[in-house]
Image (cartoon, rainbow, N blue to C red):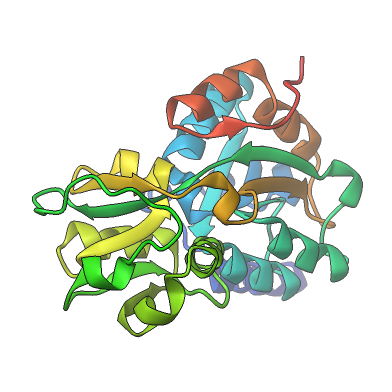
Amino acid sequence: MKMFIRSFVSALLVGAFLAVPASAKDAKPSAMAPAAAQDKTLTVFAAASMKNALDDVDKAYTAKTGVKIVASYAASSALAKQIEQGAPADVFISADTAWMNYVKDKKAISEPTRVNLLGNSIVLIAPKDSKIGKVTIDQGFDLAKLAGDGKVATGDVKAVPVGKYAKAALEKLGAWTAVEPKMAMAENVRAALALVARNEAVLGIVYSTDAKVEPGVKIVGTFPANSHPPIVYPVAATSTAHKGTDDYLAFLRSSEAKTIFEKYGFSFLAHPAT
C-alpha cells in the first residue's frame, strides 16, 4: 500500500511540471517510469527555439543508446522557475546565460557540467505574403514606422530571452521608445513566430533558426550582432540528474550533434566531444 501511495504521488509531481507527449500515451507502463527507476529515460527542459533541432538530436541519441529522451520546451524563464520548484528534469538548456545563472544561484544545477553549447542570431520577420521587402537594420532604424498600425511580436522583454535580446538591440539602435507601444509580447519565441505566421502581427523579432523552420514567414532583416548581448545557449545537468546524464551531455557536444544543430542554423560553441 505504501509503495502504491509513493508511486501515485510521484506520478502527480511529474504531471504537474511536464506534459506527456501524445506518443507516450500508448507506451507500456515501464516506458513511462521515472529515470530513477530504470535509467532508460532522461528528461530535458529546453528553450522553445531548440525544438526542431533537439528533437532530431534526441532521436539520434535514442537510436544509438536505447535511452529515451522526454523533452519539454518552453521559455527559458518558465523552465528555470519549474526547475527551481523541483520539476523532475535531468538537463536544462537555456537560450541565455541569465536563466542558467538563476538556477545555478538556486543550487539547482551541477555547475561542473555547464557548457556553452550553441549560438544564434535574431532577425526581423514578416508574414510570407507581406509587401515589406528587405530592410537594413542599423542605427536610426525606424521599426515603428515600418510596422504602421500593426504589431511587432517577440517574447516578453522582461523575461523571455528572445524578447530581452530584441529590446537590447532596439534600445541600442534608437528604435525602442517609438515602437514599445506596438510590441506584442508572447510567452515564448515560438508563440511570437506563430503570431506573424497567422498575420496577427505585421512583423516579429525571433531567432534566425525559428524563422527557417516556419514556412509562413520570411526574414526581412538581420540585427547586427553588436546590437545586443551575445546569444548563447548554455547546457547543464540538474542537481538531481539521474545516471546516464553525463553520456547525453557528451552526445550534445559530439560531431554528430554538431552536424544536426548546424543544419538548423545554430552556431556550435562547444568543443566537439569524441
